[in-house]
Image (cartoon, rainbow, N blue to C red; front, side, top):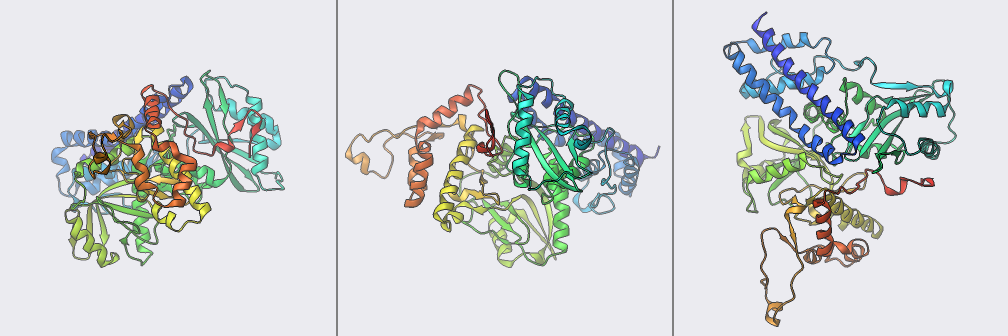
Length: 574
């Protein structure tokens, strides 16, 4: 066996170990759901995020221990890549294995060796028609067996080891909800089929069945959230059929799903058929394959730069005290650099640790996920000069200029949103009311996930395209249970009341919710809306009560769909 082939085999064995552990994690999530161990599901989701880096470290050490001389030989890496491609011919996760190869290679080699001959800049294996055996989804034929039999068989096939509270009732609700949501008249064609992905999608307290209806060749997606009650009985909570509802399940502000997939590309293809506007990079990320998401996003970025002419510029909104934010108008993302010159006394390490906290924590649909990159190469001509000057002034350590190229040594990339303060400035009374409700709900749901946002100014929140308020400024966040919520004690003397300094001691983790009114509610119409819907957020007792719930191990329900469409005892309220 040649040294190149031996190196390639060890590298692929490292990936196979990683993906085996990844699948085992999803299998454990199923067991935890069946037993109602929801805290364990959160723990599994958090632990899995570190799997990839751990396996990269293991593979790199093993290769360097076994092949120290061979790795340093002239011209060996192109040979290793060619050998690796040969090993992927019948592999079930070739795209992930190529990304794993890139990660190990870049960890071992210096950056000046990174080129198309060494790395997989483009995929070598097509995954369009790749699938497992048995296939990734089951097919059902209502015209042949009847709709009721089909739906009953779907519930049997998902294989949950829990009894149903009332499966016949739930299926009646599903049918009624589907009829209400389908375009009328709905005529069943000869090719009518129901496709259901073989594995359920697990997250927090829910298991989600994802499928599609095929009628006259057109796919209509659906999602079925399944909950387990305290009595151990299963029930269907609602039926989601609108694209925007299903898209919200896969929002960048939510925790990743745990799904047991032998062929992940088949799941991505299926999801793309029902979410055509959702980039594959985001779908891979939401399936817990965030490194593959990063790889695809970077390829998409390179492709976009090649086929566009606009230039990177500073993002709209108030400039951040610790982050420099820029964007490309033709791309719906923002790029964030930690400033070297910061207006807050906070270290770079602390800021990065806050972003890591968010990555590993349940984001409850209210904190934006980010892709983190190092040494990103851009064409210099695509930067506005004012942006380059800003980076040179506030983040010079992060900038490397080399002729016609610039390299950003470290940055975060996230979905672009309208800063909430800008949205509120231009909102009608009706829009403002809804935005204030969303803002308060965002804070409540962050608290339910044991997150205190710290700086609650509107500029630190964004409005998404779906009209949801999402938090995205993380340098002051901390666990809610680390805070001490207090009421401001009454002044002892008239002099106390007139003093510009507090007459009471303030500890490092002390928070006084009644002070929020002073810096959040200066605009009368905004204050009126806030007090109508969220006045209790100004009361320390509310925050203390939420702390107590978390300390007792209670998980509040945070559903990724509106309460009004959840099934009640009388069926769906659509």
